[in-house]
Length: 131
Image (cartoon, rainbow, N blue to C red; front, side):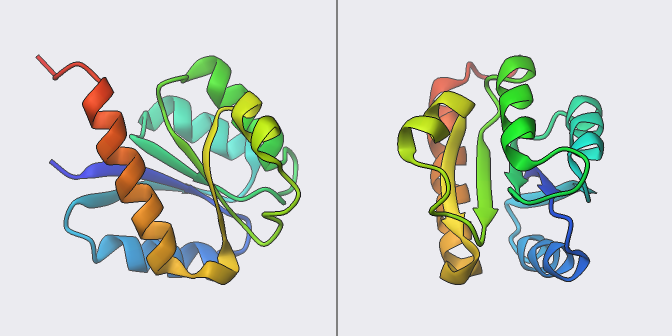
């Protein structure tokens, strides 16, 4: 069964490029998209994705606020921040916010996919098998 990913990105061209790239991966399924933080929380709660891909700079509620809420409401769901501002968050702050990984958009989609795969694999090892 493919792992479900929620993409949270306010730039429609980036959101669609990431979605298209991830949809070519047989083991992944994009279960939804959100363009701002409020929409992200609504969709995360409703869809319960296996992983959330999150931009930092968004309208209404930014990625830092969203990551903090996800940690409180869905602590087992890994959050990957995909951003141009990767130098804004240090490792201690990212850990406090529950962010599992930060990938710079300048690193490209291949590195993003590698981080997603690594997190989903490690998360599968610590989660009990589904009944």
